[in-house]
Length: 370
Ligand SMILES: Nc1ncnc2c1ncn2[C@@H]1O[C@H](COP(=O)(O)OP(=O)(O)O)[C@@H](O)[C@H]1O
Ligand SMILES: CC(=O)OP(=O)(O)O
Ligand SMILES: [Mg+2]
Image (cartoon, rainbow, N blue to C red; front, side):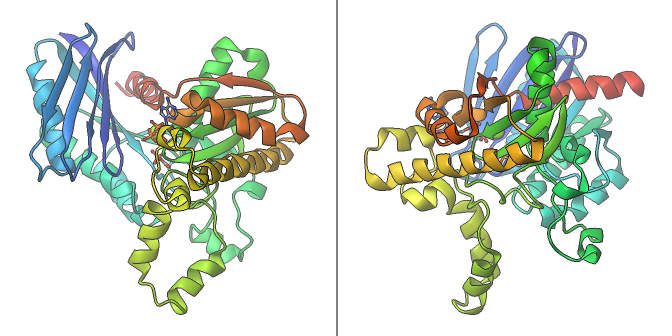
């Protein structure tokens, strides 16, 4: 039986997982339960190339999705011995600036952060509860999206609001930290010259942000207190004038829940195009709205990069990652075109691997606290 680590990344409508060797980080299995809430399906790829596809009942929620995943792992009980479960946790607040062993007290702290990540954190917490029920005493490790950004100075963590509000947590945290930490690891091992330079990393997936990095540390990033801030995303608005939110509530009488749904689920590329949040679909659509949405996205990413270049004192390299950053060449080209006024920069594409970063963090913790 091979000692293994299970990584869980619970999103709003999907549950992604990987199984890694505990000692060699060999990728043993990877998969996803997609479309949770509507026609959920479990898809798994094993190391030997075997593919498994199982439809789940229509009523399947996150708990059922995790149950289906655990049933699958049970089938491989003779092959793997899961020794730890690493959870991607979107919000660690001010207290959690490193990965940590999950205890009831930690879970309680993470529950208190739900308002700071209303559309991510509840699913992360459900995954923790379900893993505990299904795997019992196997330790759980929380790996935070916010942790990597703890290195930023006060210029990049404050809003222009009174200090009393900062002290109550109204501040900029930043997200996608596991992705940036992975990029920084790859740069350190494969491009040390670039790692020591002024790097702008762009994590462009369904969620999107950019990060100014140097020597493996986050200097500044585009997302703020929540994962709706910064550049526009697939369905999230990115930064909008806070006055517009107040007006929608006060003058249009829109309930808060509707505004929340708007800025998280119906805005961004979907809102602008009126058709899709999927960049591959938008690239293939010659219509003016689809092309405007992509152009707008590219402009906002380039403007954000310019702002981060000031935070960094210049820019030597741009690193793209995430589904859009890795695959959407026309979008990368537009961003780089808009960045031309910033001068020549080296460009790299590095595949995102938050899961492997989580497994590395977990091994580090297990080795320190066996
Ligand atoms: N070959 C491709 N060409 C253009 N866009 C792509 C391609 N592959 C993936 N994408 C885009 O990447 C985005 C999803 O990114 P991903 O990082 O997988 O998301 P998530 O945040 O859910 O992990 C979608 O907009 C999708 O259209
Ligand atoms: C924090 C965040 O935006 O995550 P995701 O890109 O997975 O939605
Ligand atoms: Mg992602």
